[in-house]
Length: 325
Image 1 (tube, one colour):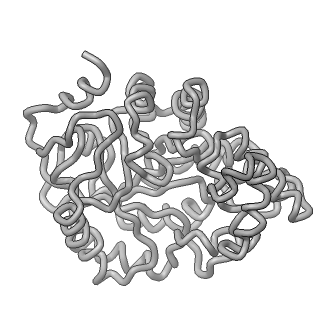
Image 2 (image 1 turned 45 degrees about the vertical axis):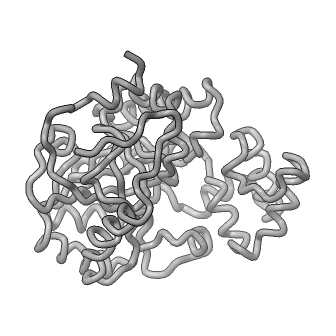
């Protein structure tokens, strides 16, 4: 049995209730330059209101409960992506005060090195206003025929070369920029998150688009990242979430690395309902930022079901049709 076939049989025959899964990223009262153009920031006051609504409306479960199939009615899993320091400064204490477990999918490189993801650099340059500069830099490094590609869609070596050139245009080094921004969690922060009820899981080593990776790079970004997170926390890593959460990254080769390295659940974004999934260990999530609490039911329940009805489930590259459970 190959890995794709194995993935489709895990948990077969076990009834699992639907679960809503939301995803946060960054938390701040105002959206500064590094994140202003990313559309990922949740205001603390709005987060507090959302959590009050969630505590009243849902049964919030932990990652362990999800993996065990211990899913009550109206189940909801709270997840967070990336390595922003605001997770421990703002969100984790709010979760802990309300007794709400959560999962952080973290990238080890910004935590342990002077590494800044290219999206942050582009946001600092001005987001959409930086398009001309980004196009010129991509053309110079990757060729004119790829000038229109986003840097994250380039192979990692070219992506990092583009980023280095863009950082140089800011008059800084990456190390100086990382230090000046103070945007990312420290190793001690990551170690302390479980004290707040926040489990730490894998989001690739450097927030990479998995379809761009060679076999060796895939191992580094997924398997080695898992080891790095376990070294930081002293706890096993059970789950993996794709950066950007696109189904096109869930190729059989990438899924094989995820599964063989010991991850028991994999998360896409897609904004879909989990009553039907492409495999028993693949889950869909919905992006949440500063919506009013009344909109959470729309974004977590109504819209995902409508998307599934209108568009169907996105297929995974090279895998059989989606299985419904």
